[in-house]
Amino acid sequence: MASEHVQALRAPGVRSLSVDAWHYARPAAFDRPSTVIAFDFCERVIIGCLFGSFAYRIASHFAITADLSTLLIIVSEALPIAFIIGRRPSATLSRQPTDWLVGIAATIAPLMITPNATGSIAPQTVWFTIMIAGMYIQIAAKVILGRSFGIIAANRGVRTLGPYRFVRHPMYAGYTLTHAGFLLTMPSLLNLAVYSLALALQIARILREERVLTQDAAYRQYAARVRYRLLPGVF
Image 1 (cartoon, rainbow, N blue to C red):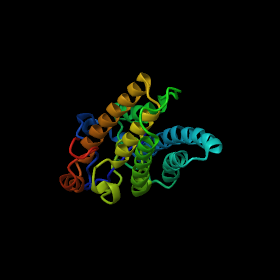
Image 2 (cartoon, rainbow, N blue to C red; image 1 turned 45 degrees about the vertical axis):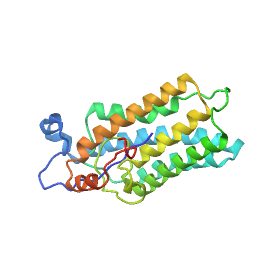
Image 3 (cartoon, helix red, strand yellow; image 1 turned 60 degrees about the vertical axis):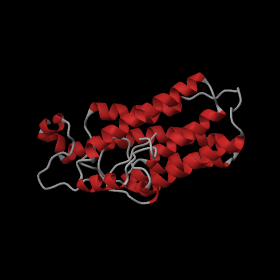
Image 4 (tube, rainbow, N blue to C red; image 1 turned 90 degrees about the horizontal axis):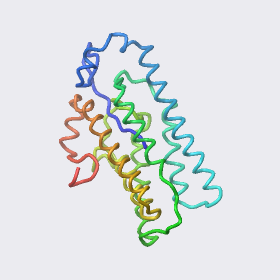
């Protein structure tokens, strides 16, 4: 449901780091402070609405169940709201409509799952362990990101500590693991389709982000050390 970024160290006069030709040809007005602030404000509003609404619904559920997994979900989804409050606007925030579409769609897709009463297809200790592990990973990644958090491709600071030592996009890895746990406890063809779509969108978002991120020498050095993006040994 959320995005990971690195801040590129740009040389003076370099307008954009995207390899997309549209970025190089875009009007100078796109780099004006007012435009940067406007795009940044739009992303903040989207993050606040999506994560705030979801966190509120989960908090209402926690008031009834008071279980650990629900509490972790609340913490995970409330952190982005807290981080964006003190975040500085980034001139590297992508203006590409497709980047915005993929980023927003990847955030919304997992919220489309539907509860069902068919029962889990794995022992409770299995799916609960998977869910908790996934939530711990994504929370750790968000804490490391701090004010660099966002859902649209941008460069806001190289992060190499914690879970970033193992994969380049641990927050997405944590979400994927959590989704797998949810699917085990709420199995259905619809939920399988939703989570499959969510994974495809996350992969698309990773690839679009890295088209921007790899323009940064610091990120290329980091990527050379940490080979895999999402799942060690696979991708």
